[in-house]
Image 1: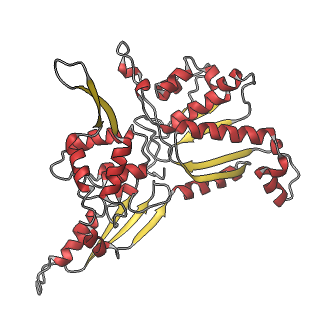
Image 2: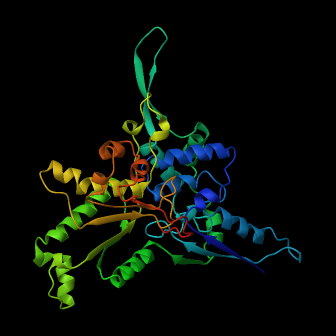
Image 3: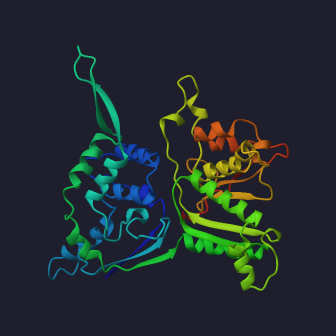
Length: 381
């Protein structure tokens, strides 16, 4: 008998990489770059990735299951009883096992048609071409951002959704164990907040969408609680009543806690001009962009509306793995005075998605808003 233990976590999609022939590693690298800039969620990206590599979408478990069927009768040297057990640390919201690291050991619940629809909806852009060399008339066509070989495989796969269904049946009985996820991290954060004297309020563990939208929502929630408006319907007041605590919403330290995975969508306006150095543009991550947006919302946006900057509110946005985007920072912590203490145009920085270069500055006290923990070894979104 053979027992195979497989430890799976976020990042597995990139680390466990075996291109489907005739794709090359360069094809997959170019594809990953497009996906990361597309605004697709991690769930949607992994639906596409599973079509491009042999180990994803149950491929690893199918290889293990094949050792059973390949055993000739009566051959004592060939293993006929292989069992695979997966220990999974989830970095995908909702913990869909087939999307964590692109599901190498579980049956695939998505189809080739699903992947091709995502490509058609999100990864095609208009492309103009002249109709002839002597005629200036041009026509607008759609061009896929993915490498041609990748596009071909995905388009062909849209019409072949049943190829692995028999293999899925063979691996469906392999056991899996979810050992950690985003909800567990949020729960622990609430426990620590309590230990530090805060009243924690968990807003949810399924936050998705643009990082900037999430930032504006969190700042609005903090402002609402700080003002204590509509106290009879306040979540803070309701919890205090249950605890028989007579304090008002503004007299207690509150910790709003949210978990999830936001996205940052690039567009043409975020690209550097031809006269600028490209090295000074576009470095950051979803957490740094969320934090800088919150800093702007707490100061510049309020001043523009004739209001004073928001005080006594701090926003921290961090990645559990200690790495936010292609940077050495896990995220950042900001308040209503952050942009006043740093130089440069924060709004222009956000337009260029260049939060890292802005937030790495140090104020008069020598402090930077960036949070640098180093790799934590744990990725739960």
